[in-house]
Image 1 (cartoon, protein in one colour):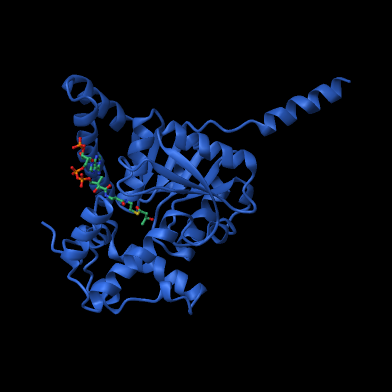
Image 2: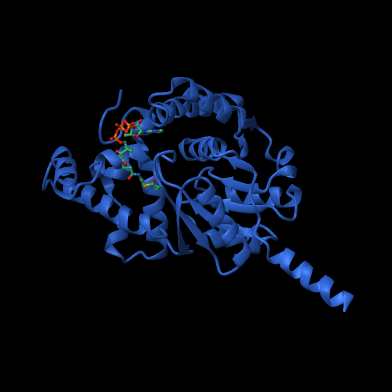
Length: 307
Ligand code: 3HC
């Protein structure tokens, strides 16, 4: 009897969802910095990891600038409360150039590094050895299958996708991606984490593009093809979609905002999976701009020039 009671208690404990308090975000680019910011501003302790202090200083500067915008809006009439919010959030963010030395006390690792499967494999394979048993791993990839990334680890049941949108502090959605190996407990813990960030989660299977990019990227590519054919100027296409469809940005503005390299990675990946699908056809113009390192806002030029 006593044994039965013990067994049922431990089964309940095993089914209990993980409440994420400590987060490690690997990758200090636009997405990683945004994720770190939102997690820190909602009371989580965060360690942001990247390869050098120089990159991390740039990430922290970006976070500070973004926090000022958030504070201005949220505490419009209370500048002191706004300053306190910024200070408190920044205090919750530590930085490191060595993920191995920080994962020992983390509940969740969110990876937002370069879209390269072998780089992600190397990272997760290593972290798998040093992170505690309970730690959940998540990738913010927009172009690679979560299952392929999870396969580098021995914790496929504690591995899922958390796909955020740019700018992370503003966009309310997170796609929570469940692979066939992701446990229900992990999935629910990730859903709860996104809610704790003040975001709206949606559930998706591990399919190319999940929901948003599967619809958005073909639309962006169609806009580039329209322009390549000379059917309309990029300026008019942008105006048309803003004024005719109510989109906050036109497709070329959005491509520059997200980064042309990111869109190219996504479309190239899909094309390799389904070469005959015309929606996934490469664009010579997009390829040329990426080759010239005209990646959009982050490099000062993409389809448009940026100050
Ligand atoms: N941090 C915090 N606040 C920010 C911010 C940031 N990085 N960027 C903008 N804001 C705030 C501004 O302070 C402003 O606040 P206010 O309402 O108090 O004035 C508000 O957001 C609006 O900003 P702006 O006035 O500067 O400019 P816009 O009105 O044009 O809004 C935008 C900017 C929110 C980016 C809007 O243009 C937009 O929603 N664009 C579409 C973005 C989008 O589609 N993102 C998804 C891309 S796909 C993706 O990320 C997936 C990936 O896998 C490719």
